[in-house]
Length: 457
Image (cartoon, rainbow, N blue to C red; front, side):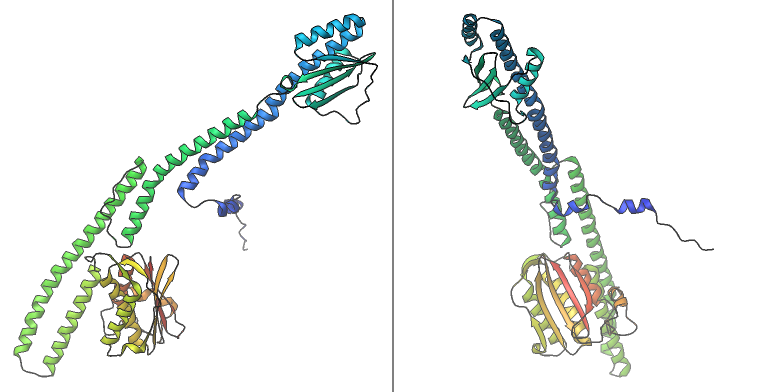
């Protein structure tokens, strides 16, 4: 009895990222991400502090200040209700002096009940204090008049009016707090920008040095500096670079010695054949020796990778035209049969001899197996391309990567290394990757193979 495996809920939850929609809005660079990590908590903290200050502390302070004024009003109303008119006038005069704001009485005046519920801080404070201390429902009005607040409260025979300065009821100059908050945030951001700039710069230099080395350019002036982790990464890069350069140098020296050791007996064989009479066997042996010398040169080129050549600023379009002319001449053709589309100069740092050999290998393969060859030089963003199309038999998609294997020949279909050593595409890809690029194979619009040399600019 077969059982159907149930999906793992944990695996599905692991793939679900609730913040995935935010990634498209996040900055890409390390500097801006680090700055965002520092600034975001500060902004959130200041927002919370501002809310607590304005909505809690400021409101509470204003409420208690309003309660003090309301208590003064309740006390004056109580005096108005319990003293004679002459004593009340004397008490109002003393209250004006002692409280610091005018207190007047409007005899015979009545106040209308409020049309809607009072919502101001001073209104609520008067409601509370009158209910607690006077214990009699009184109509009152609170209006703003410039820098003062006019408070009117009913008494038994009129209305008591007080012109209270606004500073006695509300907290003054809350904008100073805002200025301090914004000023401190700007200072913190300036310090963070300067600090992060100095911390990110060594990483940028390390990335540029690694990119330049990956493109085959020398970086002799690179020195590690910055934080200890960045220094360790830079030292690891320097160690890796030295190991690679030492490996290439040792391989080149070893192959140079092998070349010398192998070419010496080949030279003796050529001298011996020169002393022999001409016949079919001697001619066949001469052909074998020439083929061995050609194969040996290709082996050395593959192992050396043209590593001794220095990079220089060159025009890729001019290189493509030069390689096309050289390939056409080597195949005994006129350059006019090769269609080269290189509209404008594309300047980039390269090892010209090595890259010319790479382009020549691609064009040679196209000329060897096709009757029509088109070459185009393009630039697409950060990359420049040399595209070689032919109308030959092409290579099946499942065998295209196999064509790059050193010393390997395709058994059927298009044999890119017929008559050679099996290193044509291997050498071309090795040179392309030494420049930080690659070679891609695809089906050509002409029906054959499209070989694209892609290089970072």
